[in-house]
Length: 334
Length: 298
Image 1 (cartoon, one colour):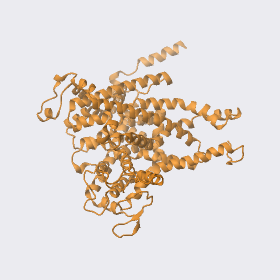
Image 2 (tube, rainbow over the protein chains, first blue to last red):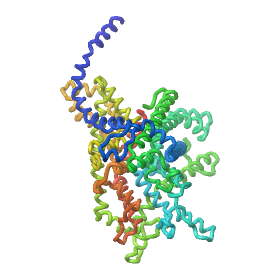
Image 3 (cartoon, one colour):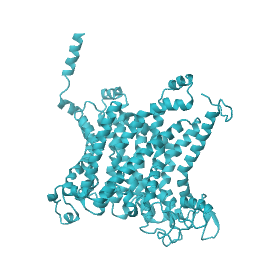
Image 4 (tube, each protein chain N blue to C red):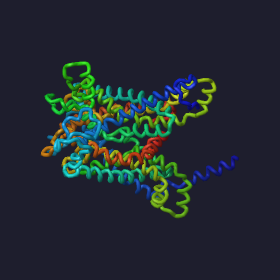
């Protein structure tokens, strides 16, 4: 035995040198070249740009062909932490993401459990096809659809509201059953108290069905033996769900939750296509604020600082999720 | 398993009531999913100013004064007005280009990443993964685009969308499923790395190519924000951008025609959705392969 092991070690020692191996794989380096070029130009080069966060860098410096002015030091960050629009954007980011995440988790799990109970294979397939559909619409299309069906009328001043959208038309019908005065349409997208409700509904409409896929995959991997044993022990369907299905899903639920927790700072396009200046106080998130300050307002230094703050918070969240993941299931998420 | 459906037999009643309510629940849920899209479809076929609760593609045509089914005047407008059909072609070719380039980058990158003995391959992997947890941010990326002269170029939109680390990692896990003995046999037969890639890896990964290709196609077709920040000339905007423009009422595309502006908006929504609706029922399984694959390997 010992001899055999010695021989084996001998083979390992004679592994080709790094130079020989690099030569052997020369064509692979060439194949990776296009990937590396794109990666370096579009992903790593911008990382060097985070230094603008400590500078004053506006359109003026660009037109005068001056570089960024670094004399401000931590000024952008001081400005950031005392700025009301930033506080509002930060709060909105957290509130919108967090509630959306909670609604998503609950709704997606419940609907996945119910889909799993559909006995008819064809029925199940049709339900899945229909529920996945909105996921493939872009945010622009989703927002456009919601703007049309939630419309309060043709006129922004509210003078002519005969052309209400579908939702207002339904509410009007019901309202007129009980009231004699004319119904005043609700402008869902310009009223602060309604905007968030609409945003949550749009998100859930678009993504809930798609989110069930991962739970359905987890459900199909639960061993049928467990259910048979439970049935012999006299557990009814509800008890089987509560004591077998739900505990078996907990791991998946947790993984999806922490993966999404790591991404809560990233919400952007769904807000960008739905918000407007009338509802900034409830809808403006960090990314949209960066866009307005940086791209529209050309204040590159300050907006880089906001973006950097967001990236750092994201990094902390990802690391925290990774630690939680390692604790719970033994391996990380990255 | 008990299958008998009987609401009043005590032995089956509980399950039967559940099945009944579950069926009703899903019929209602499907209605909630479909009605918004269906309503827009109906409104796009009715050229009138008040839609209300109408749920049929039928309405009063103001020109003839009669009720008409499937009034396609708004669609005619879209396919004859260059300001509306040109963005559609931009969408088509950017989607094709992004899908091709995206698959090229993902397959090349993934093929390199599965070479376990290659010096530096771990570093390449970390370089890719790091971009998933940290990036320079919107403004530094914008300034780099400006520096390399890609502002107002269609490539500023195509290239970043083509480089999707998540899809690349997904492709790698597909490639890892190919038996190593196939590579060894081909190598002994004198096949070059590029030959193995083209003759063995790609033909064996058709499902992966379809699945990830569709991910790229959907992402490229839905692309909007990159156009907002990088594109300035109106002949380079895609259909999503044009659609958004219509809804922001920046200009009235129905001006000078007898088309109601909401009919035109509805028709534009439907046009942007239609290409996808055609392929979706046939491609659903590929989408799902991609998702469950990612979930398992994550």
